[in-house]
Image (cartoon, rainbow, N blue to C red; front, side, top):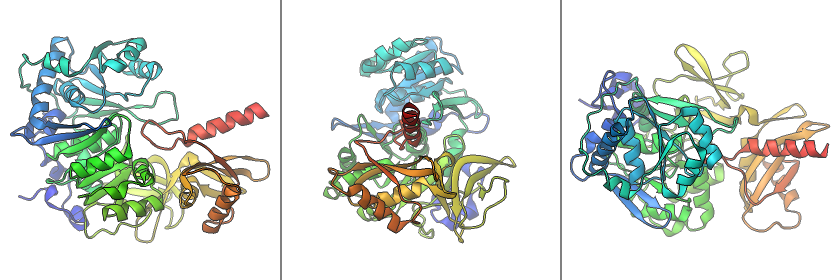
Length: 519
C-alpha cells in the first residue's frame, strides 16, 4: 500500500495526507514509541550511512546507523548504571560528532530527557539553563568542561572517543520503554527577548508530527542525501536537519566547528548532497565567499528557514544549484506551518513567498480584532490550534492566489510619520546594492516623524565618499519615498542570535542606551 513518501506532488499532498498516514511511516504506536528506536535502531541493518559530518578542520566523519544503535544502547545502560531514571534531564553540550549522537540518542533510548546545549555558551549561559532544567549530568568535551563545572549544579563528564570506548563491555542492545507522551527533548530556543529563552518540551510523539515538515517543507524522500549545516543545539539543526531525515532512513549531513562557507561547499560536492536545508545566513555566506562556482553539485531540492532570504541571494542560489530555494516557515513552539513544497513539480515557487499552508494546518493573516485581512494587506500571521487562533508574533500578507509573504516580526515594524514600514523590505532593497554584504534596519526616535529608519550596513569593501547617500538614493528609487533609511551606519559586523539570525533587538537596545546616555 502506498505511503506518504511515495507522493511528491502538491496535489497528492492535499489528497492523501492524514494523521493516520503519518503514523504508518513508523513502527511504534501512541502507547509505545521512542525517537531513538524510530530514527536509528530500525534502520541499523547492514552498513547504511546515517550521518556525514564535515568538520571545520577538513576532516570528514562518516557514521552508520548500526554504530549509533550499538553505542547508544551502551550509553543507555551506562546512564541507568549511574542512577539516571526515566524523566531525568541529561544535558549534551558537544559539537556534531559520534559522541554527540550517541549521547542524544542514548539518553532518549533510556527514557531520560535530552537537553542539547550550544557549545559556545559560557559559564553564565550554561548556568541559566542548568538552573532551569536541573540536569543530573552534563556530557561535554574537554574544552568546555571547565565552563560547565564553573556553572555548577550538575555532574560534568567529558564524552570523547575514549569515554565511548570505555563503554564497550556494556550490552549493545537496549529495549526502550517510553510512550508517545513521554518527554524526550527539552530544546531552548535562540530567541532574544529574555535572558533565558523558553525551553520547548518535545515528547517522543513529536517525531510523528515532524514528518509534516520533512515531507512538505524540506521535501525529504527515501534516496535523498540530505545536509543541514545548522547546529543541532537549535530546532532547525536537530529536528529538521537530524531527526527528520533519520526517521525516514535517509542519510543526513552536518557541519561541526566554526562555520566556513567554502568548507560547506566542498562538503556538498564531496558528499554528493541532493537535498540541502540551511539558514538564510548560510546562503548569503556562500554567495559572498566568491568561490561557490568552483565546485560541482548534485542538488535537486533546497530549503531555508530562520529569517527571510533577500531576493538577490535567493536568485543567486537558485541559479547556482539549478533549483529554487524554498522557504519553510514556523517556530520552535508551533512547528512548520507554511512551505514551498520542494520537489513538487506542480507547485510554483514565488519569489519572496513563504508558500502555502502545509496539509492539516490552517493559517490566516488577521487584524488586531481577529478579522481575516484581505489579500495585499499586512496583519499578524495566526495559526489555528485546537479550535483557537494562536499568534506567531510575525506579520505577513497574502496574494490573490493564497501565497503567504513575511512582513517581519511584530516588534520589527517601524512607524514613521504614520507610515508602516517593514524592516525586512528595507533590508532586501539595501542588499541589492553591489557594495553591501549584510544589512539590518530598525526604527530610531525622531522628533518630527516619531521614528525613522536607521540602517546598519556591512560592506564588501571599504567605505567610499558619498556611499551613504548613494545607498539612500538606491533604496528610495526601489521602495516608496518614505521607506528609505534616513540614517546609515557602516559597521564591521551585525549582532546575531546563536542560531545565526540578525539580532535587531540588540541593535534597538544599543540605540536606546546610546540615546539615554546622550539625553
